[in-house]
Image (tube, rainbow, N blue to C red):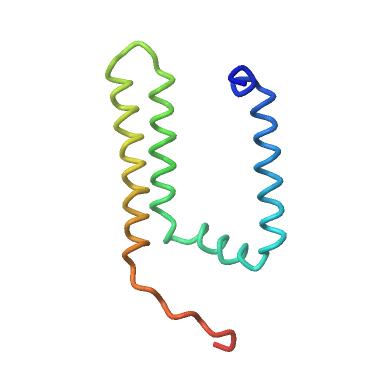
Length: 105
């Protein structure tokens, strides 16, 4: 089992399953796609872009071998990214609930 999990075939099977589940979800809940796309391309999504950029920058430092400082920077950047996502989660949990919008408004 562990050899299969480490293989390229597992990565392909995993990707196919994720794409299949995503396609089924989007097909069944297509009314959610437009608001999600509007949010993704809005200015309110900047913390998610920041978290992604920190992870990507950490990955750059991970590829630089040889210095312990590079490994340190990688871990710091990844930790900052996770902290950013944690803050977003806490903010969304503690945010006041908005009244649902009516279809006529």
